[in-house]
Image (cartoon, rainbow over all chains, first blue to last red; front, side):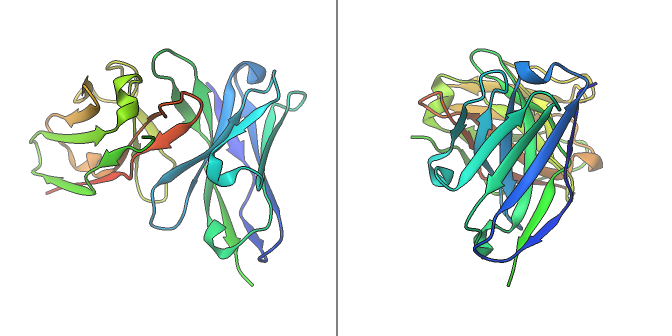
Length: 121
Length: 108
């Protein structure tokens, strides 16, 4: 059974950075893309970007291009998502999710438990 | 367009059928995926592909598509089905993902 376990909650100052991890177990890590989705308080889901570990190149939603960096470490089966220049609007729960490829409609399953990032001075 | 549009909220009587819709240009080329999210929990996959359910999802959940609109139907709604439901698909470029705004389902 595939499982994604994320790092714990973070409290950050505006202007700083945060790096959230997502460790996978129970499957071949490198063969599936890991995607990141965030959810601001009381809001909907927002796709941020994803990475296919064995290729190592990430793609991002236009909104996050340049401020978000997604990486993956195959040796530890862990994906990372770093947000820089944090602002209060980045306060959200950040989820990682494994992308299961299929045409013409792949899906995200499973999801990590979520990591709350709070940006406050 | 890379947007998916959902009704914000819908209510259904216990045991009755409810249909949630998701509209967007990308759905002409890609199947919608549906996720259920309960308060304080991570989203859970409910429907994927043409109309497939993970084994843990009851068969009262089903999906369909017509043109640019995808639908999630809950037949015989139960109290535990009360949740937010999100649709998602690749965007029209195929390189990125989009989510609908979510539909809050209340079971009366």
